[in-house]
Image (tube, rainbow, N blue to C red; front, side, top):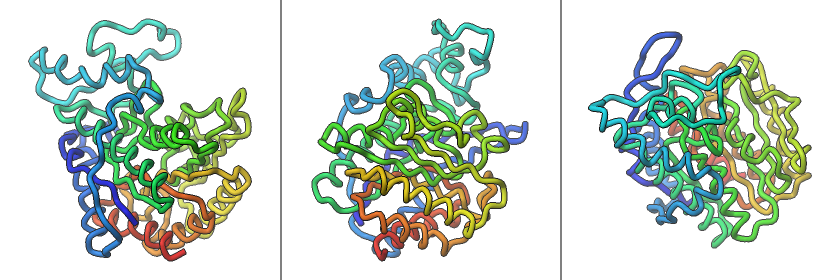
Length: 343
């Protein structure tokens, strides 16, 4: 399987986040992707290539232009105030406050364009998120050219980012950008299967009113799990998109036997949709030892996951999302890809 990778992800390294009410080192770190890359090399999964540069036009097919401009300019504006630490918000336009006005101040804009405190702007955030989008877009292009499965080893991840806000370590929604690129290159229908432990609220919101992109997500129940405010089973789409959004929320402690049943049901939804291409938002934070997740999947279960996805027999692009048990992230991510290749 071809892998797309850019070392530019290393430019982004948030120093801290709020965990259980305390400031701790960020779980989303450059080493995550390097561990996956090392495992790809160890297992001889396939060739590894650098991405092409597609500019901002494909990004702007998904993301609001004002939001993109904010991301590009945020660090220089922050630094102009003699601030050299990570840029994080301190206020949000919650209920009863005005959300129809964008503040001029950088602190106000940080809150306007984000929904949590785990997604810092750093000196290297902009080149890293640009590279991640290019990694996803190159994967989409290679998929169209060859029809063979491709792995876009993106970092930062993307599925929590909506058209005009960041959160959950995510800035650009790499899977959504790739899905739109596939549509623009001729795919009539695209399915996105999100197997990350946390619900892909950004991807859902981007495609919620569309019937050309099916979004199916397996994740921790938002009643008790981040991102809390989306991911419920009764969210099935709106307007033209009614019926094209499918959520499978599951409780803490979910093991493979129960997860497999949900995955099989998700795969059946995808079969019925009959997409021209499938994108897998590949998070492996469903692992039993993940530090911020509560499922109980084991290393070998990711092989089975790959086999089930392969049985769909659709041209497939894997886009890297979460997974924070760093010592095992390479094993688990590559097991999905190997299981898919063997399936």
